Image (tube, rainbow, N blue to C red):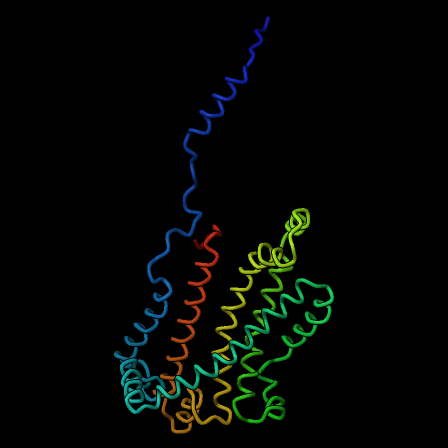
Length: 284
């Protein structure tokens, strides 16, 4: 005869508390681990070290690829002459105007297309058609429309910037769980509160991805545009150096572009971490 044992609710509760009190064993090695300090500078520093070592060993032709110290001396000479500061300020001004216009256009169009079926029908296909056309291929047409002054350069940079911002922000808006929309309707949220509490937090991760691509794209477009009928700017400086075979000046321009790109991207990543500090992600 088998004895029947009964478990009281008190005993079940005690067992559950005992189970919760036991430490949970976690597997090691799945997480990337702690972030290294200044980890984004390790790659560039290693590249510079290899470049310097190869130059010191005589493995690189100084006429084609000058040593890092030669490039630094050239940068100091251009800075002392006042040429480099002027070109840097001109390039920053062009990039800032184009980036601001592209940022505003990308966000407004993404919100219009993501929050309205009519807006999506009118905007999304047009933007994707624009994306399929090489932006730099529009340069001759924009020169005919806007002339060869600053306007066409700023317009091209704005196009380069707004496309990734629109695509990533619109994709994030489209990916918002529909249950949040239903919850907002049940709670009786107004259109403004719905956008502020549901739409914007849901779209921010995609927006920051597009923002980083837009920042990088503004510098990539600028280096080409400043070689077209320009009288100042880093691209113009590099174009003039090409005519005279000054590879050290060209490398100075590339170095400045690289620093601007790295600093601007790092600034966007820092803002992203602060704004999205509530997220628990693999990188955090």
